[in-house]
Image (cartoon, rainbow, N blue to C red; front, top):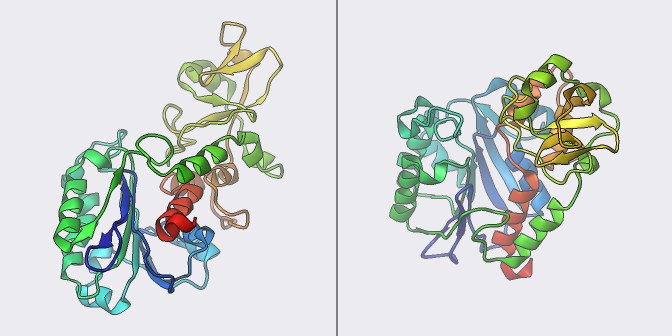
Length: 335
């Protein structure tokens, strides 16, 4: 969600999946990245063209921090629990823009949906209690989370905090499509969606696309989401990609004849699925990073396994979507 303070700024705009603030000034924004992960928000800020400085990035995940530091060596990265950051420490940072992607497990449809009773929601609740105590409250807040957060008690508590602190916000039900008023943003999203998956595939990454064993294809084809390089859509890639088949992300039909085509995510031969004729592969981590619009120079350390990369990518964001939102919300009619 993005919010602006009533007494100083124009009304902000928010989405159920991402809440952003409207920037009213063109001065350098002092940014604090909380739950910084592998740097998705950092990449989006860089892509947005905003004038900003990341004061600090904070995450407790050691593997994610290694990947973040590998790509952003100059950033002040803190590996610590967010609950250990005091009101005084936050105040000294004099933050203009606060970005955060709190743990999604308390809200995701594949989880236990324990909401605020989930221990992984503690740090977020701590922030909701801490922010109103700041003398230097952030001008803008951007929060990203999964579908399910919009109906959670955690979101209700977030809204209550925003109201108490005097932030103004407007909710969108989704970013691309849905209840979206700004035609520029919708146009940008639609243009991006017209690209085929093949345009995101790295031609030098063939060895990283592990082929699915034939017995796995035969057994689980009915629950697989199968796409080809000519497809213009894929399922969301989760951190369980490569471990589980159903609901974790699409698989790539990399070798097929003209008689096989994709129908609603299923590889079909005539009217019947033909598992024995299919060669299906997992997308490589670099493929997924490209689909999520990470910059071409973004890399993973050599000692990171594919499973490591899948796990952290599944917890990250789409760079393009967030960067467009940032541009829209900070530049407004000048976009």
